[in-house]
Image (cartoon, rainbow, N blue to C red):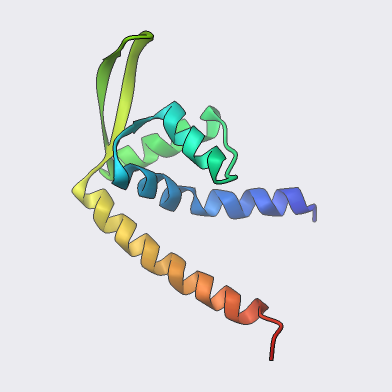
Length: 110
């Protein structure tokens, strides 16, 4: 198995958590979300992001609103909903449990 494929699968598994965490701080449009993810070394493209945003919106975890832009066409700003905050809380708890378990199992110090 190639390491890049494995790394990509690991990143995909935590994107919902990361996107909801970004939007829990403030509303963003897609390019801003991608920028935050890239800053954290989670490189994704719009073709990956938009279906995920649509899925999160369909689950009522995100809402959006259009806003006029000074530099071009209107932008769709995403924000987290109350249900999204609840889901984020659950995801964060699950992530912390998983992270702790992996760290325990991969810790080579005895």
